[in-house]
Amino acid sequence: MPASGFVSPDAIRAQFSRAMSDMYKQEVPLYGTLLELVAATNEAVLAEQPAVAQALRRSGELQRLGAERHGAIRVGTAEELATVARLFAVMGMQPVGYYDLTPAGVPVHSTAFRAVHEASLQVSPFRVFTSLLRLELIANAELRDTAAQILARRQIFTPGALALIEQHETAGGLDPAQADEFVRQALETFRWHHEATVTSAQYRALHEQHRLVADVVAFKGPHINHLTPRSLDIDRIQQGMPAKGIVPKAVIEGPPPRRHPILLRQTSFKALQEQVAFTDQRSAEGSHTARFGEIEQRGAALTPAGRALYDRLLATSREALAGVPSEGNASDYMRLLGEHFSEFPDNLEHMHNQGLAWFRYRPTERGLAAAAGHGRTLDALVRDGHVVFEPIVYEDFLPVSAAGIFQSNLGDDAQNEYGQNANQAEFEAALGRAVIDEMSLYQATQQRSIEQCLQRFGLPAAPEAGSMPS
Ligand code: OOG
Ligand code: NI
Image 1 (cartoon, protein in one colour):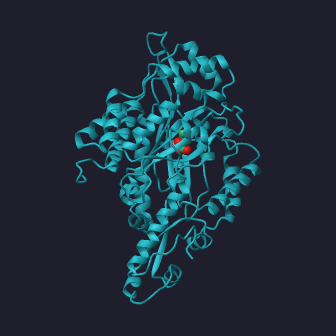
Image 2 (tube, rainbow, N blue to C red; image 1 turned 45 degrees about the horizontal axis):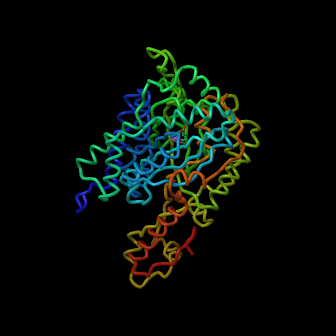
């Protein structure tokens, strides 16, 4: 605990992430089964591949591996989004990135709340992908008004959570008892309630518009709709799911398998059908499908150049498939991905020298021993093996992958046409602040590692290196 007597936001986030996971395990037992499968697979990979274990230990990711996960929520109004941002700020989570999901026929736009500094990420990388419903994209004016009225009536935060958010904002932090209470109160916002807030007829009308509209509007709050542990071998888990009674989605989203993973690969199990009670029913006679489980495998964060290459290769792979990836063409899709992505270097030296990924630099023992009077530039230190580098892990999301995840649990019939409708300014107005550009965060982390490295050799700090050391 810092001298102020306040609990660090990182510790509150770690505590909240554990509490969310415990709650979700109880709400969706299949998620517990998935966690067991992921833990067993990660252990096997670490035992079989000591180099992987060593790299994770060095970068500090090993200690966070078992606790690492992200979740997702969907809110209905600007006010809900702005307050949820204040709630996440108590836990050191800030909005990073802007994601437009309208090209995929999903009427939302989104950001990811997460820690932004590598030291905080090491304590807890917990992230929440947060989407705001865009009622203005719904053509039916009457339904739009009804939905807006229903949303205006609900309060998704407990009085206790609101009071503690204010306490944090005015006093600058929370003491241990307040932090415990905050986690308890904040959890309530994300809990599942099987009592809907609408009649069965209203639900049907909302659902006909889009299943996502019903999911956001018809319930008391933004229930957590999935949690996602990080796995070290997503292909093995995808294959292992059916034996555990888990039905995976058709394809793994993101890049193909590689020796040196990049960005993010994701797969999920399909949303479960759950019983709900509408306001005109005495018991839970209705049903709703919303909640699911997901797994991810994270790799190197890419620079703008690397990301442009990724986007191009993904787009050409998908064009070559002529259709959306599904059960029927899954093996064709994986083959096409593999073919197209052979253009993306799968070698850390090449990725480094071509400026495709962000890296963390570290002095070697040999380098430090030979340091006296040696080495002028980072380049020279790297060339002589006195400094080595490893990729910085990607902490964010991918819009095309997110769309695939949305679609697999909304049902593939849920294709609507909203066209390209990005509106970051409107999202930020609702949020009450600008989102942080993720590239600036990776660049700052890389730059800090360069400066620490040069300092160890008694060299002056290098000027901003951009995406490539020079
Ligand atoms: C969010 C889907 C996106 C991911 O991991 O890309 C997502 C949602 O379904 O609300 O979680
Ligand atoms: Ni997800």
